[in-house]
Length: 260
Image: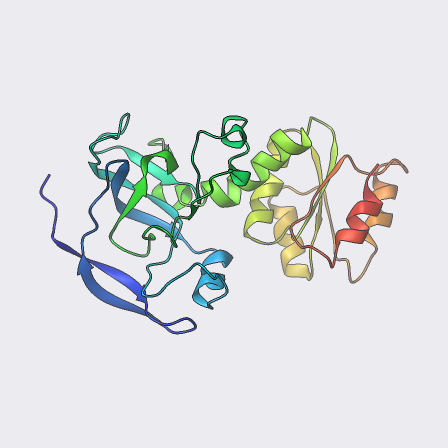
């Protein structure tokens, strides 16, 4: 495959400034890297945080974007299992894969944490990008690149929380705060697919309607009702089996009060 020597990328030159479309050199994959032709890159709140200069380890100029989907167009000399033409999506955390945390499935607290895709490595706001092979997951042909780009964050986050941390089971009751947001909407669908009953908590009719449309059994605006009280009524006084807390301090006390 013949590759170009340059590509287009959106480059951040100053924190708080614009993303500038530029022609830049094509990145070269290191021994353990894969070169992806970017087919999709979702926008995340983390990107906005980096762009605002709120991550101390970020250095400009910088190409943002860590929710990447694409096609493999080249592989590093030490890469195994990936070939030109493979479809893939990226994960965010740059981890060692060798420490006790990684080997135990707790990569998010890796003892030799190296940073993030889109900060320590080039991001996906470009036509091509390099990603460590360890940060790639195969994307089936049945899933489009746009849909695939959100899998690691918006779907992977609630799936890990429900399956590995909460161990959510069929007919169990779960509350999702911030349910109308990008992660929350996917969390509703994941929980329902696992057979759970879902209370969505968010502000405003628009987000509550969206939560119901995507499968929530009921939806509560915490500025209108106490969702912990509604949860007690919903569960016959028992309380819910789990809460996926996507908001933080504003809803945490009620989330704790809603638990069985």
